[in-house]
Each structure stands twice: as structure tokens, then as C-alpha cells.
Amino acid sequence: MSITSESSPGVHEENDNLCPTADVPKLHTSQIDDFGQAKIGEGTYGYVIRCRFRRTKKSPWENIAIKYATDPSHRENLIKEAKIVFTHIRHTNCIRIIGLYECPVNGIGVVMELMECNLSHLLAKRTIDYKIDHAISWLYQLSDAMNYFHSKNYIHGDLKLQNLLLCKNYHVLKVGDFGTFTTQHSSVATNRGTTITMAPELIKDSRNYTTKCDIYSFGIIMWQIIARR
Image (cartoon, rainbow, N blue to C red; front, top):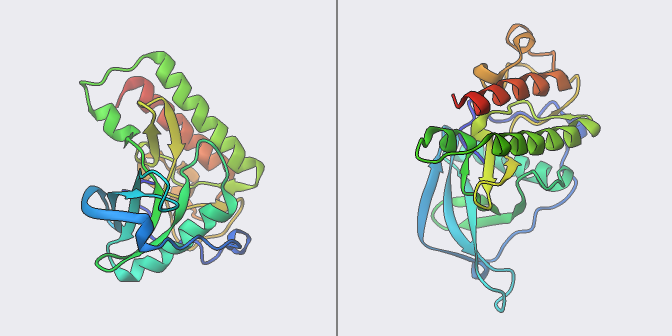
């Protein structure tokens, strides 16, 4: 899950249709190995560290990521976002939430699957080459996730390269950062999302959220991937 969103936290207050109805599992300290934890990402409202997780004492360890809020005041929004994803999102091309973990040092964090990088980082690494087939595959996977959202009357609201995560040697794309997730025609108090991929109608009127906003963002992302900019 990306942590570099420019959108402000606390985006769910006005969205009754996205109330979390499922409890996210709380993981025990015996399930998490965060000794020698390494920070792998940081943004305005949070940071992500790399750790290990196992379901039982007999299970093998697997690498995972834990997202913590930078400021305790943002922690509630982080947890609420995790609960909404855990409740409403079940798709191959969306980040998987494993549970919540309370660290004595960092406080409570969201445990999720570990991804290799986001598309923004990959495009910036000129040493990594990709073909048009890769671009088509990423865009197809993104469109499949978008179709899933829209079929349920949901809107992501902040699709951008930083929120598109890659794994399995960069072949599998997953959408992350659901801090702006909302329902169609929702009315919000302020603009959300990132200016470069934000639909023009949202810049003028923040109450104009429809699926078209995600489709506009998709078009910008498609140009960025193909032009590598």
C-alpha cells in the first residue's frame, strides 16, 4: 500500500455506504518478527517497514509490510482505511490486508502483503527496461480492478503511479492506498487525490465524484507508462 498520497486523511467520514462491517484480525506478537525492521517507504502521513509474519508457530515465515501512521492523530484514519479494504475489497489486483499489529515502539499498524515497488519507482529506474507487452498487461490489470470498483458503485479517487504496486518480478500489478475510496456521486468537503491525475471537474467542484474521475486518471497513467514520464 502506497504512502505517498497527497490527499488528506480522514476521507471516509461522509461515506455511510463504506462503513467497515468486518473486524480486521489483530495479530499476536508471536506472529510478527520485526527485529531489525527496515523502513522501505515514507510519506506525509505514514511510513512502511518490512517485517516477517507467520500464521502459526509451525507456519513458515513470509515477508510482509506494516504501515504505521507518522502522527498518532492519523492512526484512526489508517485503521479505518484498513477495515474498509478488509470489508469491501476482494480482487486479485488489489493489495491484501492481513491484519492489525500493535508494536510497542510504533503503535498500531496495518499488516499487508509485501510488494516489490510502485510503478513510479520502476519508471524512474532507467536501468530497468520494459516492453509494450508489459505496459499493456499493467493497464489491463488496472482496468480490471477499476471495473471491479465501478461494478460495486465504488470510486478509488486517487489512481496514480505511486498507488500502483508491483510484485512477482514486476508482472503483477495491485492497486493500493484506499484513503480516497468513496461511492459514486458522493459529496465531499474538499478536493482529494493528486492534481496531475485529477479529473478537471474535480479541481473546480469537489462534489462531482463519479466513475469518470477514475477513467480520466487511467488515461493519464496510460500516457505516463507508455511515454515513461
